[in-house]
Image (cartoon, rainbow, N blue to C red; front, side, top):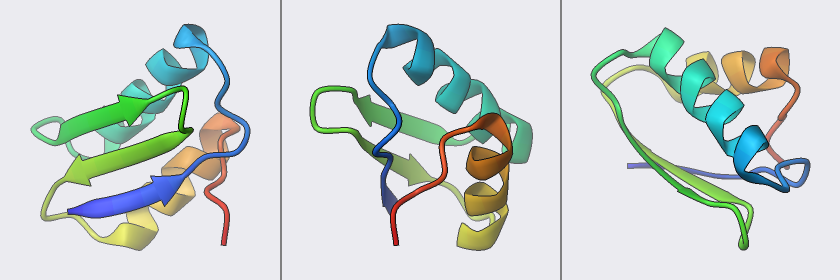
Length: 64
């Protein structure tokens, strides 16, 4: 399970863009988004860096 904190995610629209970015990396990924806590959990066999890159490109870079 990959876990990220996304400080720039603040609403449902943001969450939908985050989910779409994750599905572009792995269409079969299981994505769990908590907008209030600004967290993202992903069950996938793809690399963490692939998701970091996709999230940053979508405008939601994970915090370090």
